[in-house]
Image (spheres, rainbow, N blue to C red):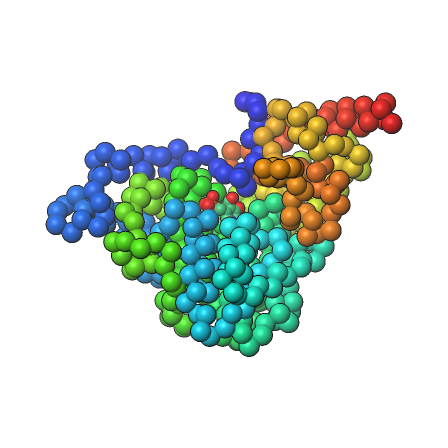
Length: 403
Ligand code: PLP
């Protein structure tokens, strides 16, 4: 086992070696510009892009021409939120989002406020979930867009996207979802879930960094957006800029592998996560699990009858009472995990997601996000519980000495 042990798969994932293999020819051999219409270099690159577009579209139940390639989900979120709102501003000026959204969505909404739009930020329930009824109650005659994520990147909470989609569709309001953390990890289909816009990115699904996509509904209704970039008119005018051919090919390869392995991987991750949670709880007292409770599972990792997937299978977010957060992270050097704090230029701020759940600042700082993924093993999980056990006990003991 190599240390530090990587348990931060929500932040990013390593590129799967099968994906690297698929990408390699597109750096040297087939290097053409997919927009070059006059020679075979361009045609080959374009063919690779179109094949990849088809695979990514199929993975979410979309048509090929509904996929727009971007530089990643930050751009996709901005294009969806700003692009839709700006185009619809004659129709209305109200946008609805959730308190635990990624900053790519929240800050795009703040930019809209500066442009004169009104934004409602919905609170969540204590598990981090926003129900469709709450969305429905927030809609007004001026609402043009709702943006609620598929699954949260800190606590893994899965929102009821299909019900929210139905509510929005009935009211004729566009529905965007940041599907970054859930795409290829849990079922996601833009048709049955009535999603109009969806952001995805390759580096969370064992593909390369710097490539993402936005699903833009083509009919029923056809969604129109004001582009953010102006230039060569690529991607049907929605995203000018030379296409990242190796990235696009890698993204499609990554999506295909992840989908083929998804159900087995969900079971494996549920088992690993339970092992991690139980391992920590058996050793350490006063541990609080943030987000939705872990589901009951059987010995093969299947959900028990009546259980619903309310949380990404690879996510665990724990708070350790009586421990100073920064000291905890310093003590966990053998583990690559994330804390419930974010450094801003001025200070260390508790995570806005944990705050939205009502977690105190103190407990938010003493929180750890564990993200399990494709290359996580039982050995790594056991090492993690032992490492956390040692660190928390040491810190609690020294707090007692001081106290
Ligand atoms: N949305 C969510 C939920 C994320 O977790 C991330 C990644 O941190 C992003 C958006 C931004 O994605 P990207 O890194 O591709 O810009």
